[in-house]
Structure formats: C-alpha cells, structure tokens
Length: 171
Image (cartoon, rainbow, N blue to C red; front, side, top):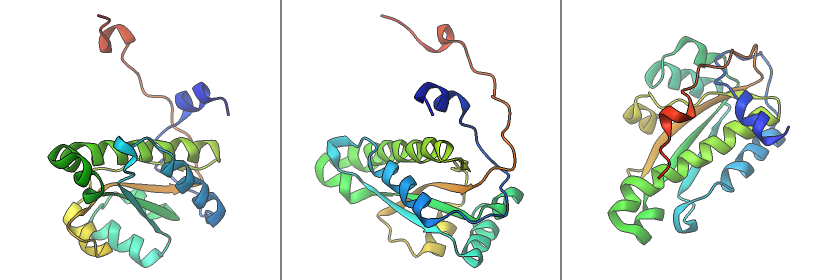
C-alpha cells in the first residue's frame, strides 16, 4: 500500500475475527518495530508477544477490562527497557527518550499491521502495576503500550482531524 494512503486509512481496531495470526506476520510486525528510530540508536524496547488465551484473559481482568480486548487473538506488550537509554542520556533518557522510542516502535507496528491486512489498537490506559506483575517484569522494564492485534471485523470511519492551520505554526 502507498504510504500516504496507509497513514490516512489506519484505524484503531476494536473488533477481531476468530482467526489466529500466523507467526510469520507477527515476526514482520516485530521487524518493523525494530526499525523505528531511537535516540542514539539505543533501541530501548522489548516486545512481549502474547498468544496464550489464559494470559490474555488475565490481562483483560486485571490490567485492561475493556470488553472488546478479549476478542484479540494476540497482543504485543511494548516495554521501555529504561537502562538502555539511561546509560547514554541519564535522566532525560530515563524519563523521555525511552518513551519516545517505544512510541515510534508502536506506530511502526500499527502501520505494518494495516499493510498486512491486520488491525490493532494502541492501548495506553491500562493498570501498569498489574500488567507488570502478570508479565513478571523487572522495575526497569516499563510497559508503555498494549497492542491487541488480529484480523478486523470492520474498519471504522476516519475521525475528524483538526486543520493544519490550527495545529501548526510556521516561523
């Protein structure tokens, strides 16, 4: 798909077909994620690919109770590996760069998913401590996003966007 069309047609998908996502497509998503830009090329990310239905159910119950979440056949939890940025950039790496870098990786996953005929949703409003406990994460591995993925049941309409004149200032 042509890039500008891809950017304009990607949507948050919250309804998935009862169909498994093949591992080769998941590997393509992870490959797209690892090519995201990162400060100093630190690549401060780690991706937990969850296909286990029991664990997805626990995440649904304890970290993100949205009714549609449990329909997803797979979820990728994107974590910031804080020391990877902190070693090079100190406090700014710890509190900003590792978050920016993982956000870029999330966007690459979502764009790649659309290109592959999949859909996903960027979930950030989850219970971080409960998710950390469910995945057994160490304190320096911070979950930044959950991306439920699958084949979309439908594609929502494009949300209204602010005009460029309202969001940009040319100096």
